[in-house]
Image (cartoon, rainbow over all chains, first blue to last red; front, side, top):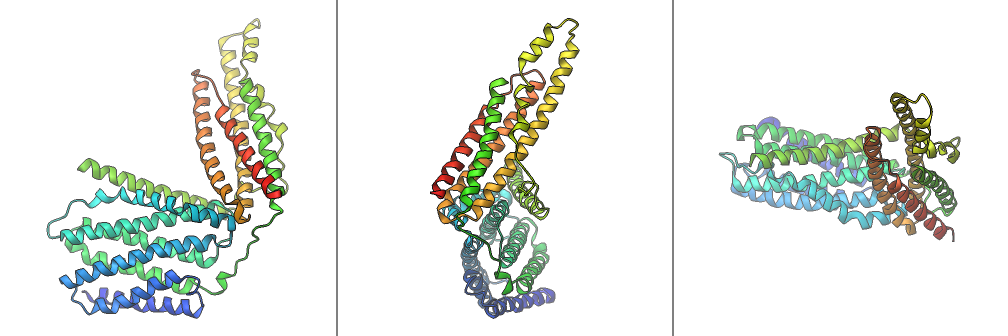
Length: 257
Length: 175
């Protein structure tokens, strides 16, 4: 491993610890349990992985296990995100519970379209590593697409979103965009490009960790919204009358056209 | 194989770019305090759209053709102008729909858990509205070229469904 790559790896490890400290310090680890667990596992994995020689079979096996655990935890993270983002809006939360499978299905369908991109294994590449990276990238894309769909829903409804949730989503969108793109390039480019790609991926990961370290704050949890207000029924009725008027106008137009 | 890879690039790249584009567009719109949000001064007035009823009526053209001195170019200019004015009204009608729909979304966002099914209804109706207005736009373009006739019935059915759904839910929650 090159010196710069090793420095970035250590920097990632230290910043991961900083994110964990931040979550504990701001008492956010109780709210964002999956995020906390995700980075706790990552923090535990890094020192173990550093002990193993990079180009060895045992490293490969440890990488498969670690990344599989990370991806399972990442799915937990995005589900938690979706739940937390809609938590203060009862009607949207109900919709969220029912729509989660539809969203995951759509995200999986989108990610599946990219499976063929790196179907060819280049000379010098391990078939198993190559296929695992394809799988890892596809799950990463599912996470990314799911986050984008959730962002779309959150933006479509005029709701107040907690600043921490925005930071949380932004970080993961950047993290999984860079990771999925990077893993694709690792499979597409010759082995000589592996180290520069690893440096870029570590750099992106560090940027996301820094975003969470400085972006997640205790006071950013305190956005309040009015929910379950019965007076909205009257407004909905007024709205229905207006839509009725539009309807009547277009009906008249259709009769006369 | 090459074709599959090309298709794969197109499908994945296209879908992700579209998703990212839509999210970025929504973000920009939200930051600009969207025009779709109903402000205190905006008043929806149905009288404004009464003119649409007669704009594309064939009777007027038939009457025009029966007049002495009528020439084909007069008829063409008449049709062109009527279509232009109709489009202006149609654009305003769509903007009003979007405003009212935005208001419905605002209400649903702050509604209680029992209103969860309204979210599905709003999603479905917005999607169908987009499809049907696109359909009407194509028909308007074809009608302008002298092919076919404008049919706004699907849009009307949608608006009727929307009105009925919102009204039903409003009554349910007011009870």
